Image (cartoon, rainbow, N blue to C red; front, side):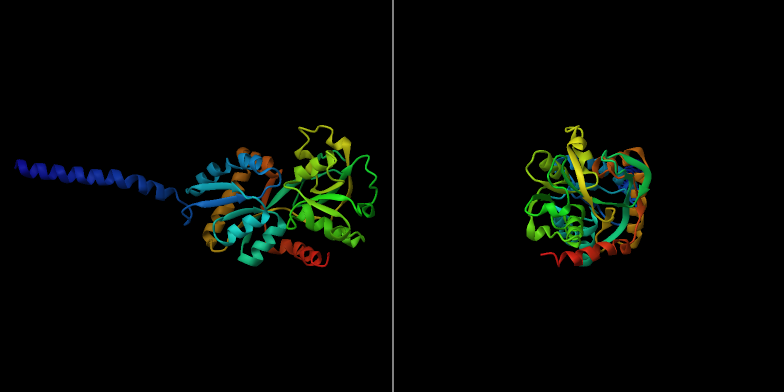
Length: 309
């Protein structure tokens, strides 16, 4: 009788122990909302990479809570790096400007899920926002206020700060639009690559370059440390409208997971913490669902850029 009771007790303890081990795993599985084991997210640098990473890191916790899996946020060294990383499946979700997105889509089957929204900007050289949300922006050609450069033709022989050739605002759209106006800056100007649109603005302020191709209005990036930036500079010209930046997923993520991630990002973008991240990193005011055809204008400019030599 005693042996029987002991056996039952051992069994009970064994079952209890097993349940105590299994329970946490079961609870964890219950919170997991996607089939992915983890989500690797990468941002591209619009200003200094270390500054962006510090601002973007809080997205890890917010998105992990929504998806029930670990989320890792990093910042790429340039546009091409994140495109290649998505192609090799090292990065699952990329915050991509239009041109790199189009490349990622064409080369590796990346798919856009969201497009950023920003408040429009006034044209009164203040960098102030309007109250209207828009899904486009423009590039501006920035010069010093007292610069002898009065028209685009005056850019001949001048030193211009630009971004990588895959940058929509920092290279492609200004180069193509200027060429349409008879100014081939690739052939007739000295293009100097800098890392980040803030560095483009600073290069003009410091006199290191005569002009800079930056997004409208990148001067807000440096306004805190350079309060007179709007007084000391002016916009020589604006480009055509550029579709806003994207959030895109690599090829191979299921439709179900895609929908879940898309909805999670929309939900996060409506929270205070989410809004702060989007605004602090890229000056986004929100996100909206998007489709690949929105970026056909970018494909057109890519084609036209090939003729500017």
